[in-house]
Amino acid sequence: MRKTTNFLLVHMAVSDLLLPIFLFPQVITELYINSWLVGGLFGQAFCKLYVFVSDVSVAVCIQSLLVLLAADRFEAVVFPLLSPLVSPKLYLFFIPAT
Image (cartoon, rainbow, N blue to C red):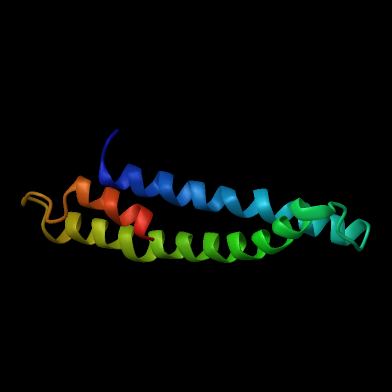
């Protein structure tokens, strides 16, 4: 189970889960109440954080899917008999870098 493809799929799944966790509370409160319910320092921080996290989550998902996963599959299809050009340890560096 410790293959590079599995690492990349878990990375993409976590970035996809961050989007609804941060975005849905804001959308639901704006739809039904038309104001933000949480006040104080936490409310201000969450109000700014949800925009950042939602944009970064989408960018990370696209980066993981289009670049890292495509490069891994390209390597597996074009060079099937060679040892991996990019080691799994290097992918563990690429994941936080995205």
